Image (cartoon, rainbow, N blue to C red; front, top):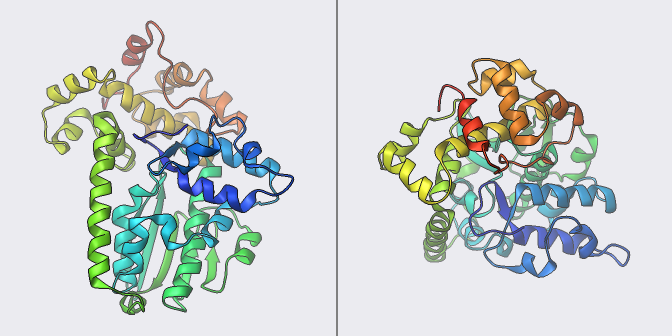
Length: 363
């Protein structure tokens, strides 16, 4: 399903590119899109987005039908500048790698909201931190991280040469990944606390051969316009969800988000009701997305998951989770299929009231 107001989504054009890479005489795009609700022509929509659930189903099809265990690497190795639109041209025409990374961080929402990027300087090296959005499946997380690694693998070699890139990944060891990536990433450490891509700080200052200040400025202006347009299409509920998804482990309450949006808590409540939702519903959806991630990806216990989400006891959490997904947390964890359940509670008579009764203390 495509949408112009994505919550946790990725641009449809990337799936089109991957389909082009994977289709053969025996494997069609229609087969790869089976069960996703997508049509091939929808992938060509310039401003089309694919939500997380749809992307995850597509990736499951790739696993089952295509002879490609690392679709993210395949995609990343075949992405050119034009695939990223204005953000790609802004990075290509930047003065150096440091400026290009700043462009990637600032305008990453134009590519996907499935993860976000941050840059940290640690002594003589700089780390690009890759933080997956809470609630996405491990399959999707691997796809996003692998695509980024492969993109840096190709573009780093093309623009600079040897960047001395080192990767730290939270995934279990995967020799096939090391074999598929090129010489630009010469060291991968698995089973790490988080995903990071490291390079020497001095490498950030190496001039780009294609640096063009005028072209860079034009591309930045286009990126800013697209980011503003995305924010307008996102709507108030989308803005609230974005802040909930990116606020760290401790979820913000309604007062904090209202202040961040420049309005009172009462105004936020009234405007969300006008749009057919409420802060409690949005917060509950984010909590349930995080719960799926904690239970299946982090393999936390029900009690620890409830504690992280702010519930006073596991019974309240279990009731809320079952109401939202149709399964108990234990049943969901045993299913081992993150990303297959609905990401929002079903809208049926009485649901909102029961959700409010079981809502945790930080609402």
